[in-house]
Length: 489
View 1: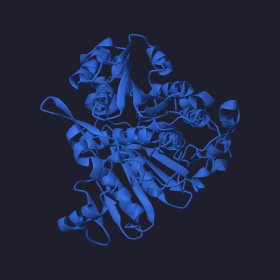
View 2: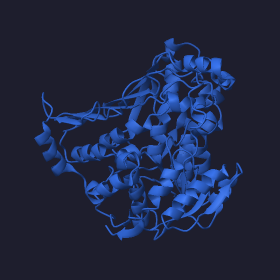
View 3: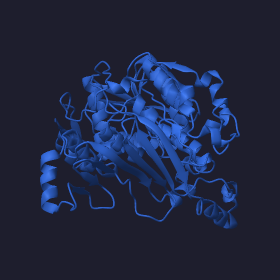
View 4: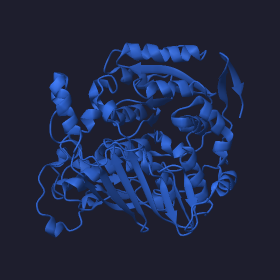
């Protein structure tokens, strides 16, 4: 199957849209407001033809009896991954990597406290991660670095024979997204984006309900990442070298779409029966970030670098229409003083579910179900994966347990040689909303085609199977009063 990337940049109303400024490199650079002309996008090998060499959807790699993991990036997310993985049977954490030796030492302490052997350290060198990826001692690379490093590291790991699991987003430009697809297909190595929200308890419940027809045919979904991160983004001690604040400085769109988007895409069978067709996106002005930087710079010259114009709009709203005529609303706001929300609303011909604002609600008519009805729903539709590891996940932790369910499921799939719930096409598509929305915002919310990263195989790809019809036999170690006891499940 062939897919012409040039066709992905058609713009509705091209005759009246005028001449767009900019050049091809700016589409993936730090200046997305200089939106490239659709004519310019037809030039160059980077946007030529992609030939699908292998379908990674439903791909089952050979079984791995003991999954040997190397973790790259031990800042905000990496240590938690080390701790969670140390609780899963059939896992060996063989390698730890960070440019800061003290972060590696801290992760080693996590292993030691779990009664596990020390891992090989890769540290103090910006290219140390490459040595980790070429090691014969590991088969799976777990990437927890800043966004701009996710794709280069995943590509290098796959090219060196390793399965990859990367924090979100997997890619920041469309070209990166295509590179992930092409490399995963070529090497036949998994490239999973670690979208933990797909494994939160209500999301798994409603996915199972959708699979069993409770909502009828799904017609609309709403997703979001609304989370006030101002204090973290402007903190000198949170993100290494202020990398996350810098991501917000020169790109204007939905920069972080996947937490809300992933679960609703699974419910709607996107990439597995349906596909995104086109989107349109709009951002408010920035009323907060630049002002906060200026105010901080008055007291601390360190912040002068950030006291500039060009920050993304405080609220971005992106609308997607699927080939089958279904719609998705995706919002992004990490600056407003609002309660946390991913919305997670799925609506069908027979019913609706909504997670935020809390409490979680479900209805099949004008009235939300009462507590008794909700308890009955939980009893009937809680999926097997939650019954199997849900309580253990809550004890081990990671955003209430969803992080642990995600890690357990990854290992269980690799251990049993069964397809992953999230494949490279999901990683590419969900991540692509960021650059596509930035293009639309820069062009007065013109619509833009969404690439079909499956190159047509979405028509026959099977929906995500969360039934544990295969696998489900991976054990969990638990720590009780300082000793490690094995619980076989």
